[in-house]
Image (cartoon, rainbow, N blue to C red; front, side, top):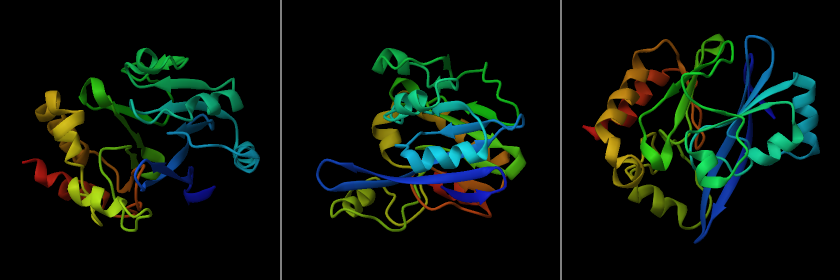
Length: 223
């Protein structure tokens, strides 16, 4: 577990896909205003990670933020059975995962604002604003993989327009949000009008300063 800022930590994890593609990712841990911990996009938790979390405080919430970032949510729930497991709309129906509450307007964790993006039935991503640290936490809205592992990863990143740059993937328009693309773009751009500076994404390097401008540039290709 690595500290990013006061009340903000990360646990890196690489996900290997078929064909030699590796997505370097992270679980983001946020401290809520009531001092409880929120696990965003869980990764495998070994004994060391669980012990570190126990030292930080009580895990109160586990978040599966979209329809493709849920693989380790059940394991996190098993490790912290008293935590509330929040899942993207449709996740329970898609996977059978025992979601306690759905990510929607009813998200009520103090000190953390959930912002659903109109990203359709294939993604349904919710992003999170953590005002205490001035941070926006996103999942697959943008990538920032400056260094890659796996022989095929650079080719995939070039194909979707994310090779060694911060950008939204073309796969959003081609596959994941093509039915709601205009509304998705409008909502994504509205994020840059909120008050935050640090941008944390699931895949790639964190932008410590100037995150809003970086996000504007990463969305620019969308027209």
